[in-house]
Amino acid sequence: MNISEARNLLKSKSISPVELVEECEKNWKNQEHDLNAVITPMFERAKEIAKKTVFDESKPLSCIPYAVKDNICIKGEKLTCGSRILGEYRSLFESTATWRLANAGAIAVCKTNMDEFAMGSSGEYSAFGPTHNPLDKELVPGGSSSGSSAAVAAGYSIFSLGSDTGGSVRQPAAFCGLSAIRPTYGTVSRYGLVAFTSSIDQIGPMAKNSFDSLTVLKAMRGLDEKDSTSVAWSPVELPEKPVIGIPKELLELDIDPEIMAMLQECKKRLEGIGARFIEVSIPNLKHSVATYQLITPSECSANLSRFDGVRYGLQVEDPELGNQYKKTRSDGFGAEVKRRILIGTYALSEGFYDAYYLQACKMRAKIAAELYSALSKVDVILTPTAPTTAFEIGSIQDPLKMHACDLLTIPQGLAGIPAVTFPFGKDSKGRPIGMQLSGPAFSDDSLAMLAGKIEEAR
Amino acid sequence: MSVEKKDLKRIFELSKLDHTKSDGLEKDIERLVESFSQIRNIDLKDCEPMVLPKWCILRYRKDEPLDGVKKSDALSQAPKTDGTFYIVPKIISGEP
Image 1 (cartoon, rainbow over the protein chains, first blue to last red):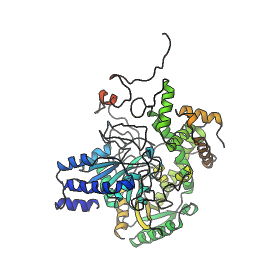
Image 2 (cartoon, one colour):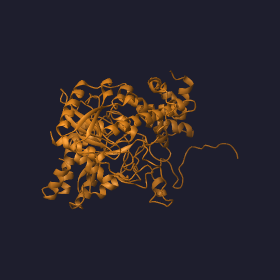
Image 3 (tube, rainbow over the protein chains, first blue to last red):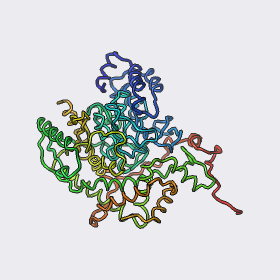
Image 4 (cartoon, helix red, strand yellow):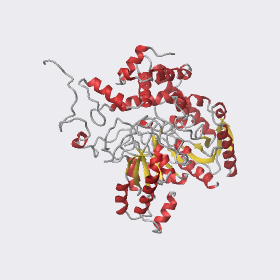
């Protein structure tokens, strides 16, 4: 069920707000044993809210159940970030995104599983165990917003929120056959989103189609005093028949040939609705992963220093404070988080800062400039969302190989520009393929409308 | 380029992570640092580093209190508290 179908049922009173939540709860009860998509169910709370709520047509998300990635704060609810280190912590804050969605009528039904602190691309790096893909339980649902994609695909909710740094809403959406938007940096407040990489993180919607994702995005974005990097929405409209570029460097990258073939199909579909194609170049695309793997650990090593076991969360006692910090953090964090904290600390430390962190910030500028330049020649850039479709759980053990999963979703995050993923066909094993449209800053709505048009033309 | 042992030990110390429980992380760190050589050796002298997209200008809000966190609520989350302060192991020893 998508948002407009749910609204029609609610409007005609074919279903009550409580029944809609119960429908989601039923799907959760029936499938959660196999999927492990939820860390904290909130269905009882949601039913209480739904009981007191009457469908209000003027609110775009009135009575619509949604799932929330567990690094986004809902006041009074447990918050884990997929980690042991937060222990039994209950959030003292309400994120601006969930606060705005509540004002738009949406009802949160669960907090979802995720790669610990949003570091991962498969949903396997959670302290609460891996999430499974509802389309095939042997496969990963993608990550890091693994539970949020699985929740929508399995019908636990009608849409969900994830957070996207290197592709964490787009890649799992692609793996589960969903649509998702990474918004222009700054347009959705990060207040109440637990920081991973503050200069890149954005909360993004995941849904059954791009029109739904856009409805959610519109309800939650806007200037927020509580986030100093927040910016006012100032739309850039793209032409109805856009000029689209495909980066020639895609041919140099390790992308599944079936996905590259589907890219050509997608190009034809876009030409069918009036788009014109030219070649663009992003020469440093191949350095995106290394750049990202220096910048994000550097920022996260600072952001995660707050987890010390003194003020909240897990504490492993020791008579000496320094040892207590170490024991707490060593027991509380998983391997991938430790890897990134260590790399970030290394890149920022005396003697290495210029060679690593500063160099990565310069390369970030170069990649961003190449994207902005390409987008001055074309309206939109088309690429696949991920180099592979969903893979088997446990099949990628090498952290460097896991990092490469984000090859096509990292550049937009580095540059801060919006990108939309939408399902486009399947591979020979029947696994969904996602295609991605990226555009200039503030073109989010046009991109989502264009993706929606392609979805409708199916 | 491999990472020297003393540097590895130092980053564990700075990260407040237990070096004795490194569980193969040292090897991963070496491989990751090795993978960064691809950008380390590119001449970017004339390039200005980017830390935020250009349309984001960090601004200050008005210096007025917002609905903050109550002290009792904050302390209620602490592993150890006496109701007024967080309690940590003794960090100053000896006579004043």
